[in-house]
Length: 478
Ligand code: TA9
Image (cartoon, rainbow, N blue to C red; front, top):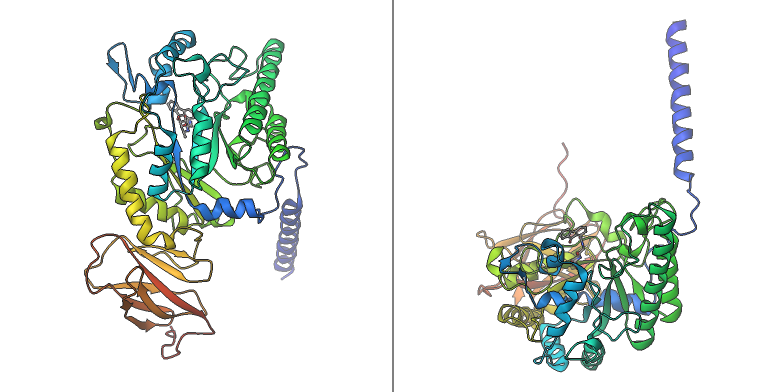
């Protein structure tokens, strides 16, 4: 008896200690100077615009468009914008491509029209990719459009043309710069540290230059920030974010820029998102069932049309090329989880787009013009994912079912959260009324349209927040 009591006391003691220490752990905050600056999602107008835009396009355009994946007669299957690295081309030799930079077919107005027709609300342009070539006449580098036969500020023309079409412009900027002698992958000596500090000052100058020359820019999307040298200088990433925010009120910044005091990236050492939105979903998406945590913060994904080509590559037969429906699926997938999607284009060196990209942009635009209501300004709906496709929710609480998989049964299962009932369903576009049958508590069969639309379609649900459903079904007692 005595022994049992002692064991119980001991057990209670151990439980109490472990409870206390875990409670303490929750409270334990790591003090940070360069950690997250936002509390939860930003709700100001600029951020809401960023979020409501939902669909964007990426433009990867640089010297790499000229060789298009081929160097000295050899075609490299890897990413075209990395060719300099695949073919081990020294920077001074690579920069000789500048003599061939003459995109005579470049017409920013045409580019902007194409984006408008595709239905994109914003465009992310590579101002400078890893190679270091600047699409604007930067006074801090000799590797710019100004020193090419074409001479013109193509970035400036793009900013104006897209803005004239009502499209927001975002700047992609690679911090890693293969052309700069002071760039370091890691800091191993005092000399490295001095050189890298010079490099950071150069980067500050370029960022200030971009913000000053193109003040309508809405967002900076940083890339090339994963090296040990940058992780060691988390202070600089916090400084760059702050500097741009002071210069451009409302500007948004991606998480990829950021590292904290301890070199922790994207999310700080206390688990808080740095920057304004998470930017890690590149060529992949969160699982719509297992990764619902992403609905807690803003995020933006980006994708390529072939497997992994961002810049122009002359041979797209080397990997699988996605169809318009597969691209639309990814767009809706992102929005259904509260994210944005950016679809990439790699224009040719002559300033035109390859036919495949033109066709794809058209096909997406056609679909968006019919069903965009279920994408723009939409968000996570809070309904459990079903096999037929994705739910999104509009600003007025309407729920959209975006159907990608047409069922043989002729009906689509909808399971509503507790206290939400489905009142009515209709086909977006035609307004055709769709039959809804309650099959169990919080479960419905929603019929497919009478005539198969022959493409992914959208059913709009009118839902009501009410205690229980019609009440004819009860949960089974088991
Ligand atoms: C990459 C990467 O793409 C890559 C490709 C080929 C060899 C090595 C790497 C590599 C190593 C570390 C990070 C990355 C990476 O994910 N880079 C970010 C990419 N962002 C895309 C939007 C494109 O701009 C791509 O060119 C860029 O590298």
